[in-house]
Image (cartoon, rainbow, N blue to C red; front, side, top):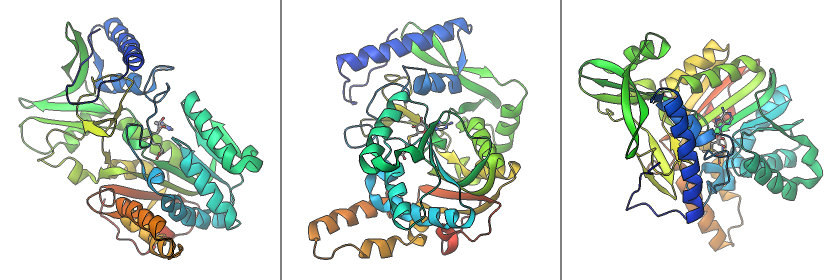
Length: 389
Ligand SMILES: C[S@@+](CC[C@H](N)C(=O)[O-])C[C@H]1O[C@@H](n2cnc3c(N)ncnc32)[C@H](O)[C@@H]1O
């Protein structure tokens, strides 16, 4: 199975290449069995989550400086400090657990639990929904080091609980839930999928059958018959809907890069938002080294809000990451540091700058808070600018 190469991206080690080759063969076999075409969503599911082989289910480093990307909780502990203030409000009001989806390296779990405990608001349990056995081990080791005595309160789960009370948090999760690619060309709408050729994986469009994806594509694509390629994430919507319906009392926070629908499906965004992350470079080729890179798209928050409402929750707030963190007290937390520790203060300030600067994560990243069985307003949206959805 020939793998796509890129002279600009750093070459993987021989072991990593061999791993990617195994995953590529696995995907190729599935494409052959399916009659030489699978939808892109299935390709993405296999590339990221094929048991023991996918990017998130095998051992690649992923997070942090020597991985492929850095997330908010990895950048600064101020992230967890701010979220903990929001979490404390929820735990105080309804009690219960914290449930974190896709806890990554475990840094948010360790920091957030520590902060909550320090203000007497430790959750009954800290649930971690993690699909990767390797990441579970990484998370467990980190949490055991910080909170060894409380380790029994941390519970790893493989599916959403039927009932949830407390706070749910999903940071950069919705963007990696497999999405469909839809492609309008010559006035027709197709689903973009993947076939095999002598040169490896190739794009291949098939006409969209009647169904939800087609209906949605017609509803969201901007008018006209010019070429337009974009993403629709019905699976991410289903995840939000399920969380909303399982929520008995409390709040779910979804934090991710994305836009409301009218910006997402803007006429000028005619090439979509698909983006792959590999060793801190991003590019648009999901066929490059499957299993060694992340594959993502921006989130359509209007669709997520609708899904939350279908699940019986209310959207209590939607704002930028910068406004949310500031509303949670970021400025006070930053100035509370020791003013004589100049170097660490400077480092902390520059990390905070990354979290809130409009040219970094501050504006592109949004926070959507949904609530059920609890009175608002929520701290993180109290003084925050509410964006239209
Ligand atoms: C980009 S990482 C984010 C990690 C971490 N939240 C952070 O901010 O550092 C995305 C994580 O979401 C997880 N994920 C994807 N789909 C999920 C789902 N349906 N339920 C729970 N976790 C999921 C992936 O396995 C992965 O660990």
